[in-house]
Image (cartoon, rainbow, N blue to C red; front, side):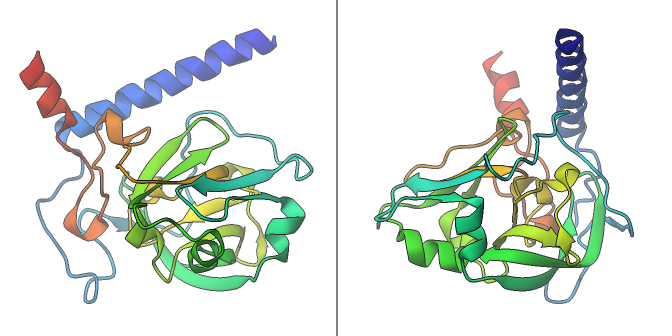
Length: 232
């Protein structure tokens, strides 16, 4: 039975990947417009929703807090491994922000509780040659961001949403929240934050998504398929 479930999950994941690669080829939702984030709250091509749609790779890791770990390493002076109690003992912040999904929905005024990226940076002390960050998730997902963007004052590792523990389907017990970028950059179920010198595109970035992911510039998709077509 478990083997059958694994096969079905792999089929669902493969279908999702194929569909998103198709979206990238077609340029789904692209309007060709740019917006000023200081003036336009809703990025081009987005629609506002009241619920919170669930999108993942078809695997929802368990939420056993006794086994939870967050590793912070790579090019840092002070590598850290937190257990759940260690994580919750760090200075806590509450940040309200909007979120924008590349699939076309946006949700306003989300209240997050967690540990700020600023605290993580002050504690880990990245090396001078660290320029990028790679998030590793418990389901095998990865995504990449520039270090200066991870250092944004609205970035945190969140454990709660709207005053309640973050649900598993939304990345609980803890996830990255980077609200100025499309939400695929806000890795669910984060288990490792790795500081690196060279950029390292992640799971969706090598499957047709843009390397940066700015919603107001409509950076939904990259040119990876154009490059592949030229090679073929």
